[in-house]
Length: 323
Image (cartoon, rainbow, N blue to C red; front, top):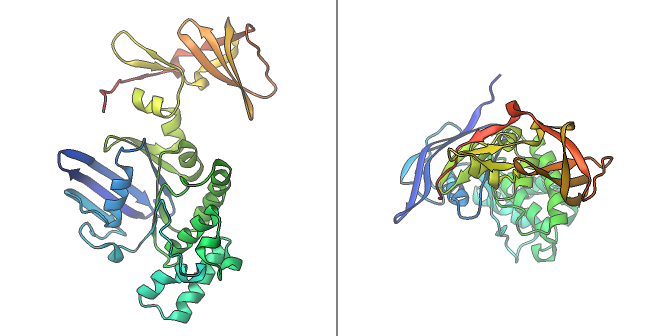
């Protein structure tokens, strides 16, 4: 059974003077799915999210949350939850009152708003901190308060703008796991804006790769990372084995196309220990060929490794003009 589409965006444009920050973007997000808008800083990700949230007016196109055309409706009529990069918490209010604030603005009586707020804080693991001020919390706890405030009205569309960017790497790793578990429990569509590939891979079901205001590629996470559509996408996603062709296109050799233990022996000219394994560079006749070895496999500088490239596993990608 096909999941209900919770967000539909068609032909969306947003210009600032001569600059097109969002260019003819169309996407769909089903209920219960997480879509990551992934791209470099300045590519238009946050502008697109702000247009979807109603914080910016588009120049063309439609935004349909929940099947309704709300392209020109104000944010409060869209029924979406929004978590900003800086969390936007009220320092003079308690954690509980921060979460209950939006509910009371929507007309929910105080006791009911506080009860719902406490229920949501329990959901994000902060029930015991309800009475504290937000200034007394860690960065990770503040992030979860902002998330609880967005979830309290039980929106069917949740928008997150770089939600983990202000946290240190260790805390981001922990929260990625927690958010993935939370999203799995919610019957909510989640649109996540991020420039962090690990965040997109950890949290999203689908990735929409964005460059210079336009979508370059959209698809399931594994498909986009394993089979990028263009040379730019491959470089942005960190694919190392890219080789220019005489016709101006680029050949990508995924690691899945390399069979170790077969073919000629190539010298190891680079070696980098990783947390789980080893990254080596071989002096292949195509050019430097980067491979990851398991913790059980060992190779030192000057050693040789047999490696055969399977042509049918390689991709030929178009090169794009500079954005």
